[in-house]
Length: 125
Image (cartoon, rainbow, N blue to C red; front, top):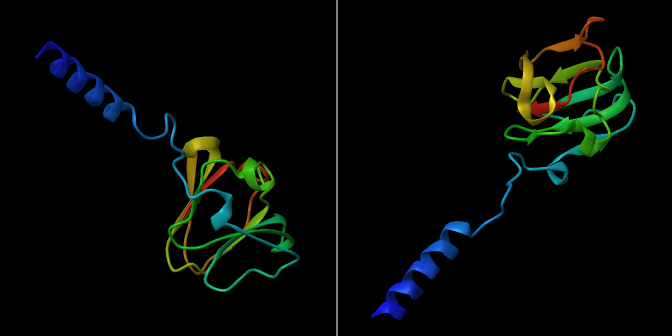
């Protein structure tokens, strides 16, 4: 009886610990597309390294999120963005969707003002 209870307790403890210790809250870089120049893929939110939607960058689709733009070499690099994803997306000043959030409305194209230039660190779409 004691062994059965001990075994049951051990199995319950193992069951509670199953799964990753720290799950990433995003799809990660495999869901993200890099592009060059101004070649933003259709139906995407695109963030660009340069103003006026140039310099290449990264494209996101509806439902994509990336907790760190560092993972795609775009941390603190965004100078302009265009959104044709069909949804409002958000960029955050810090990794893990922390800090001030800024909406990126569908159908808009924006050159960031000087105080926001090169400050994006995470994206949720």
